[in-house]
Image (cartoon, rainbow, N blue to C red; front, top):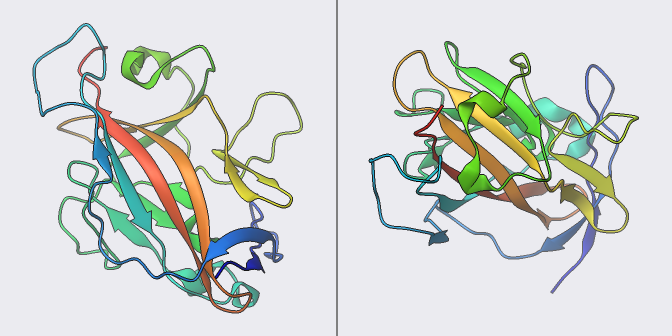
Length: 208
């Protein structure tokens, strides 16, 4: 059975309004990888991101009328796609929070950078491509120009629609830096109890 529900997503301090998302009544559990593009390989490659994996990030249910905080946060380990709803979850390097867990943040001590470049491919991304200053979070695009400042647009009737060419760089104080791209977004539930489910592509950037 498929239904439509309103999924409100606003940036900054604005009160969240309800907006439409295509939904499914199924309730997925866990964070098993959906696919892998290559076997694990820690060596440098002709590609800056020689190995990428696709994972499903499953948001928490909440009533959008209650505001963004009702959804809590989903903490994700990009190394293996594992996720939980507690901040003590080990190996966390990405946090999905806000309404329908559609806003991406990073833990304390990490930096988050945004890139919009439609001529790049995920495999060819380099750290040096992310020349802009670090940002606190990335969510809905609120730009009034042709250059977005978020990873998705709200499009009627499809709802949350990832923007092609948007990439994120997540860098810890020590250890591997990860490239991240959100490639899919689906809503599940009803108008008063719903969640977002996101498909992400991620991989370690080996080259500068």
